Length: 363
Length: 229
Image (cartoon, rainbow over all chains, first blue to last red):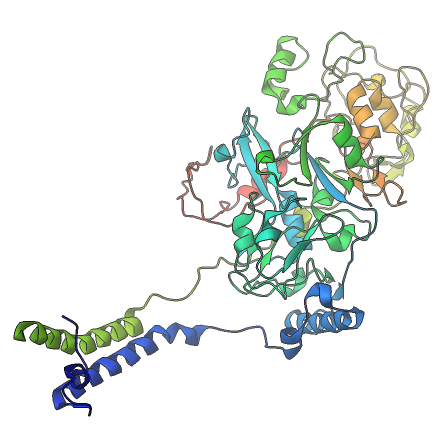
């Protein structure tokens, strides 16, 4: 029952090929049609534009950890050249190394976050993310009050104003896990955890398999499906090899705690842009640092503790929600007569009864 | 015996034209390889200033009267009495008092020297030193602030670094109306909306398809700016 196209051979009566005119025509049409179909299928390749020029230097470049100082300088010079060629800006690219005695930790006060997304865009601005399609490292999730079920969260909220009294806001970015699943799955060791706890990516070594993106339980990694587009005047010229230098198409990127800033002692861009001071960053090995104080004294939790990733990103609460964000406390304030019903979304901060005025909550 | 081989021959004849048809379809009607990419969206840097939330009056000598800088006491040499009753502000019309029960000017300002603030213990405090004044009511917040658990820090994450600076109360809160006003959120992720999503914007009647990307209706942003601090 086999479909015999090559009749001469399949007949097997003679060792010499026995072409009939008919079988030749039939096979010829099939082969010609096949080639035509293949050519047509490959047709879209003509539209493929390779914007990045091929570079022998990049092709022969070693893995980040294997490069010596001279080779690193060579690589940095190549990056400077490429960025200048592409964006007409001479960048200041450096290789920022982790410092001894420093382990970075982030803490975020959920009682204070109002969901304004200023952190999101300060991050995009600082880290040269693609503006089209836009890549954002920070995802602010609007959650209904009274639950931590992420299934009920919404990161597409677009209210005229925030915060909404019935929701709280939970920004999620790379948690820089101490037990990072993304690092384990990388087949080429293009991503690893540095000494100060930051999980970094060598964009020149990444093959774009996206295993890490699938492995991350916090949806922190982003993939460059297309050539990233950044307007020339928006480029941040202060760049780190492992952080915010422009990425090529086809590699994975993510939050790196602004390591080109934080390894120099500065604060991450998202923290600087936060209008409410909900974001806290520091060295957990220093007992006097703000994050150490928070871990010691505040009620702290990590997201998806049960998956065992040991994040370095902690969420915490204040003793009580600010009155301005707490409808129940506002109702009490109105009933006690020291707040009017109209002004309840603009109330002050309470002392929790420590001042002895007898109200239990300050006016 | 002859029937299968004839069938095979017919199928064999069909393979060529079938490939031709596929080729024609791919060449003429093949779906475009273009990835739908949105337009370049740039959120201006003024939308996310990377510094203190507000610039407070830290020196009473620089109170602005019209276009001139005067100290508070220059006018209040004439008006020294502290009103016992709560009164309507005639001069300081830009000041909105919304500080809960704290509605009297003289709760914080010092009656006979208007360049100073006064906590309950009677010591005088300059405008640049507000945490000590605020702490007398807001004890738990003050405790948190001292350890860097409340409020914003700028400069450096390292407390030993001289650039490390903890903002004072009035660099974020308006002392006369301390609670944060609601503000307009900046645009969210430009990804497809999946799962259960609210389809109607409150108060706008603007429907979102589950597959549409983020968009802010025109003109809405300007309205919201007014409500901002």
